[in-house]
Length: 493
Ligand code: ADP
Ligand code: GLC
Image 1: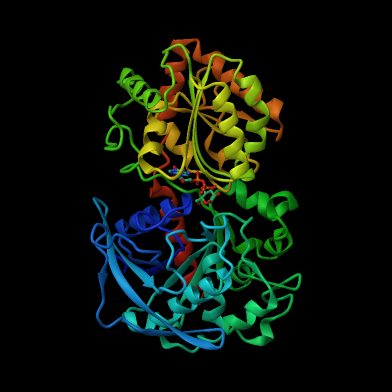
Image 2 (image 1 turned 90 degrees about the horizontal axis):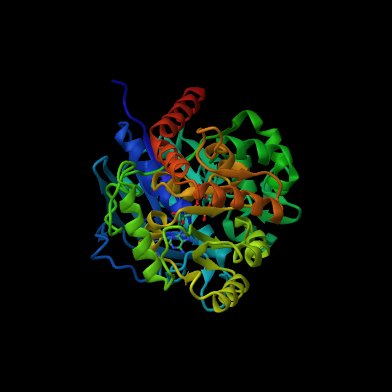
């Protein structure tokens, strides 16, 4: 058997320690799958806020305290704590970087008092990136691959190739950078570049400068050995159009032979209605009446009148334009005329919250809302809803539509990014959901109406549910692709 690789997985969020979206799920499940395939994977992430260290089993490492990290013109210090993600697949060690100046709050990126990004996000993540390269030497472990994710880890590939290039532990190391969302570009002024300590000769168009600004995302795209993104379709979209590339399409084109689309997978030990401890009635494709029992509980929880003839639409989402909320807003008055109920779980844009609160006031028995983050409700909504709505403007991968399939909750999605790669229109007994192309409210309404119409035909609907539940998007295939990529890079030396 060939020797396994040493992989350091750098991420700004990972469940169960922190989560704002899908990156946290991927950062938990991909490393586990890589470890199950025989590789030594370690995750490194910030330790945000006062964490329940007992419950999460986070421990001090005596020799990893007061580690010095240069940021701007000063030296700051951090402690590295250790924890393990343990599952039937195996054990992955997690290093949590503790620094009470930068990571004092629980919220990873946004200051909850103002609802805006922290003003010192440049320093917070310069610190995080630099701390990772600084502590490597102290871990007594030489990685073969450093796998970075999104702009918050974007400086690492540049550190490796510049000021840390001579570090013995970094010789022959290869960096992979995964784009989970190109809209987040880590853009800061020139002064932030100075704080990074990167050499001045890379402040130019070929280097890290992006229209007079310092971009963590650009830095990563320029300096990493390979770039991946989370679906094949999104890889194509971002490298070919301005609409999806959001200014980076030109740069990505120049790195086309190093850009790969690898679809995210689902951790079916967490998202599986047959084993889900967070739902009251566990079920499989042959026990669909139990899905209805979940629907009853869900309706009751949200004060909605349960009726088996009335389909229930669920949404679990960040409340942002990305997710198509302007379209949902537009169809809401028409949707409320239909025989349908609607439940939304989300956090984000206060204007959308206000809008939905207004709708709830008008239709208290048809609409249920919860603004906040709740893992438990997310599982119950997946289990109890009939239809899952995801009309995204763009969607690098999207996990919720894949979770929905497993729960027999039929996705209605816009054909974009990973949604187009995972959801196919139900027709003549084949397919797993409903789709529409053009980003337009009436197109969305048409797709929803197709779902509502089919719902009336119980036999067909059950057939569709069973199709949906039979799809398998587990990590194995995708993890294999990452491993092949790592190995190809290491051969290049
Ligand atoms: P994105 O990462 O763009 O937000 P994904 O579909 O990839 O979209 O992943 C979203 C993840 O975040 C899913 O696991 C989803 O269940 C979860 N999620 C989003 N909003 C909430 C919320 N308010 N409460 C609980 N989970 C949420
Ligand atoms: C991002 C994307 C989402 C993707 C997730 C995990 O948040 O918006 O589409 O599923 O990252 O890769």
